[in-house]
Length: 488
Image 1: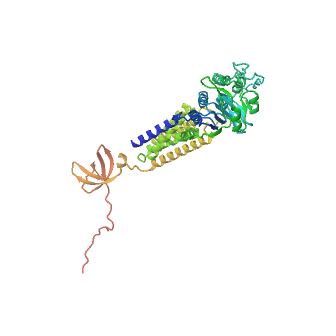
Image 2: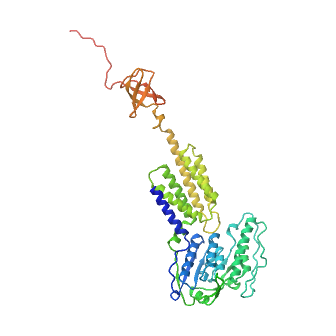
Image 3: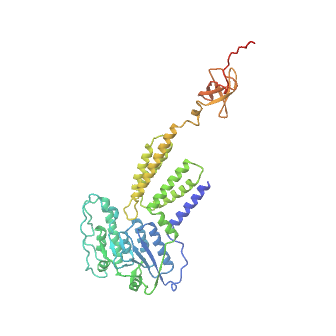
């Protein structure tokens, strides 16, 4: 009971800490004191932890009346759900957000392009690139024809007015299935709506989704995809100063940022914990650790440590997986594999259940993460290692089962057959014997007497069938001889 209570308290605390997207509001500081620009850094794939980090940063910036928030981006893409949550937070922010693709060599691909388009000010450093916003789940379908060449955007669009796409209907390849077309249509419309809201190049936004095109920093500036190029933060703050941006309440606001200092805002412990456990590899290992911990606790009850550690790991793994795009068929196959492995240890299947459980484990692991987003797949080497461990487990269980079949029976009714004991009481109608420090009623076809050694030959309920044992010759005894007295 105490273990269950401790696990429940820990699970509730972790769920509240990880799902609480907005921290407790801090006491607002006067506007005269707030002279720093928060710097949020996104480096790597975009997932639930990134969305939580940006949400907390924007909330803190609003409490401190920051004049501007700089979001430094270097990402290959990420999850659609997390990207849309970040876009919602930026659109609802009461503080202007400047998305800055930096440093040199960085990129804002796929999900990063949506975040840049949603920001009030879009900036890139020299040597960076932006685009390739086609949903990655749809890319590289086997047998699909080559996509059409990207249509160049119209560089001569009038300044201050977003250009419209030439054909806002669709240019998705004809061979694409219905689901592919739906997802591409939705993503293209989403990015076009952000471009129209911020007055940026709508035609290129459409091409970035449908054709997967990318732009360098100079090309993005020439085609009005971004506002300007800045090699460092002071240049960004200087050039962003005085720009008029449209806020979520429809009120135009002028950015005041010239000469202000920037303060890097690091993720707190809750965001770091969320980032660790929502890594697909870590979540998968937590799930396996929980399964094996509970299994060993069931096999050797009373020890406690495997059960407690396994329960906590299983809860953490399940919490992390519910925040990721998980295939429920994969989860079901993993659970089925675990059930088969447990059955292999309890039932005489001679390896059939164990082999089936290993196959279910491998297939379920491959299907577990239902996305092709970069940074959110399970390594093939990890899955292979798990398969090898399960295979060794099955071999060990099979070998132990074979050894157990060759061992003599040491307990139960079967062990009584062939056992020997001593007669305690004997009468013409009844007899009792001592066997394994127990008193048993016995029956025999031969006459029995007290102190006689007998062997059990059968059992009928609570009565044992016995037979007398041949008396062993006394050690040192010599055979009797007939002696004749010698005469004088």
